[in-house]
Amino acid sequence: MKANVGGIDRVVRLLAGIALIAVGAMGMLAAPWSYVAMGVGAVFALTAVIRFCPLYAIFGISSCSAK
Image (cartoon, rainbow, N blue to C red; front, side):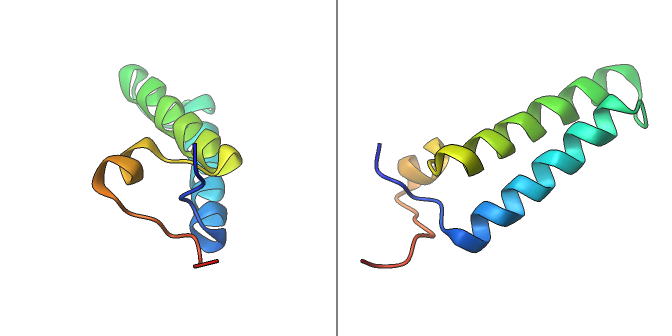
């Protein structure tokens, strides 16, 4: 897996992931939507940590700076 998630994108994904997990865990949404929010938040946080997004790879997108 070649990294395709850059610095700013990584920070935004991590913050959004943490926020979605928190919103879902605190019960601010109805029951099924809280699980969806936590799941999406977990995916955002995971892609930020491993620096690879499968959807970016499928569409040929990369937010990493050129090396």
